[in-house]
Length: 126
Image 1 (tube, rainbow, N blue to C red):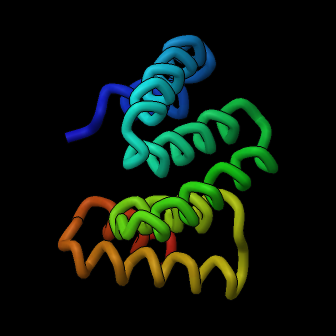
Image 2 (cartoon, rainbow, N blue to C red; image 1 turned 30 degrees about the horizontal axis):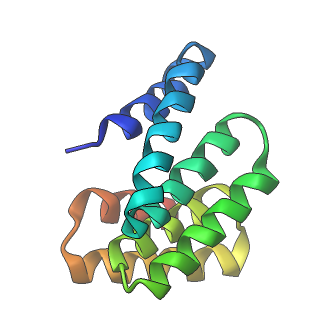
């Protein structure tokens, strides 16, 4: 099941800029949550990166996704690590670096038995 914040970002990605304001509001809401609960930091950084990617700022997106990965590793959150690696591989990296990051993501997702995202990664690897 997708979180409502993710729904707005997905809608923006699929249907265009008309969902930008709702996506921004959603990111602000998760920032409040992450301010109180540090375990929300990796997801906040993931969504902030996605927001900046959609907003046409790939450099800022990459920084947020890298921060999401570091924070998820620090907090020992393998699902969040896998998601950050997926976004880096999907949007930012290329060549062997992309393949390495996606394979690492796939490894984590398979270990966690998360099929939907694992299928996304497999499609990117083919």
